[in-house]
Image (cartoon, rainbow, N blue to C red; front, side, top):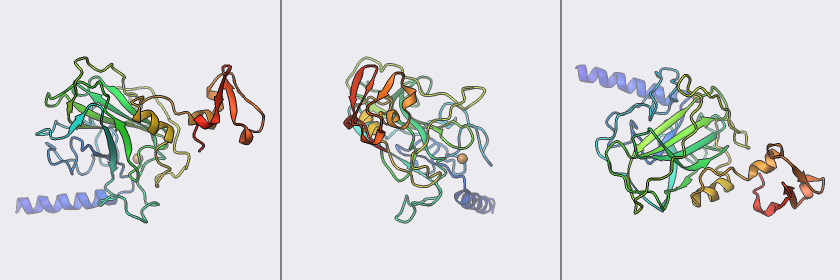
Length: 287
Ligand SMILES: [Cu+2]
């Protein structure tokens, strides 16, 4: 009887959680620690896997790194140096994934923001960012290409080898989200990857810096957005994961000093100069 009643309670909680408005997303490929769909998860956190580390309605704050979830019981996800993986996202409001007609349903993506994908070889103490998507990430309607660096060394120590996703949302409360997938990494290099730390912000007192990244230019709030910036895709496919997207030049010229747009009408220019270097517009993506 005890089992039945707790099963009923569990079903009630899960039903409620799938209907709450503010169901954020987690990564789905690779499957992270604590995820209800992860067959190797040591715990399955149905209610709070998608909440920020800051906590949220009905969810206590979670520990950094990785939400404090225990490592998987066995490691079956393998990343190979040089391969490009398609990261995607899961949202409990879309139990079968995004379907045609779902574009205007709420995925609590807070108009996107900045996603960073990183590898850690020490269980989430240090990181190497290997892919960054600005403005439009996350979004369950799209795949997010990330290249595992050619020079990534092997890693097979249980609990130490992680693929991390962290997200700073564009709109809403200032929050820090992170999921970590236990992985094995297969590579040839004998040198460790250089440390390229993830953005640590919006999680006081641990990460006191408060950041508000630029959001999705489609300005669709919680609905389907405009997808990965082409400039981010090409940078990430080259393994230059955190190069700033060139589209920023067009959406906010003021971030660069000494930008001169010639001639005056922006719509008709094909070239402009940055610090005396002429830049052709064909190098940029119009949004
Ligand atoms: Cu939210």
